Image 1 (tube, helix red, strand yellow):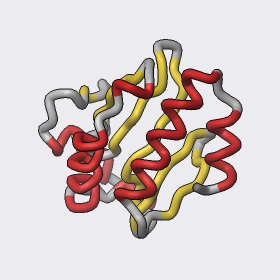
Image 2: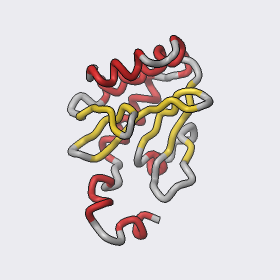
Image 3: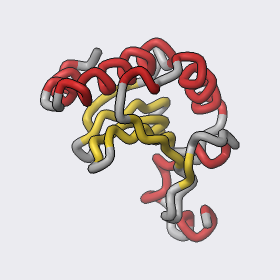
Amino acid sequence: MNPDISNYNQSQSIAERDICDRLAAIIDDGLPDAESKIWHAHPVWFLEGNPIVGYSKMKGGIRLMFWSGVSFEEEKLRPSTGKFKDASIMFTAAEQISREEMARWLEKGKHIQWDYKNVVKSKGVLERLK
């Protein structure tokens, strides 16, 4: 596990740390070629510079987010209300995390990707993502 992500996880409450550690382990296993780091204060995994998946502490638990998750067409992943195509799920206990579902979502994350790494480089891209 990336040491910065480990430090992030250790800074959480015991229950949240269990969730974060389980998510990080499953993501590391499912995306072995990904670069992982703290990005905008949260753990995020990237493939070829494109953000794929990350998690963050929220008021209601730990939110797992897939940047292109809307395109996965997975019932448990809820779309955000923003301009992007992300979708997420909230966890309040490590036992809620299904390794099988995560493996499926991570596999989709490898193959279904909006090109977020170039969004800021190209004028008008945000308009095309709507």
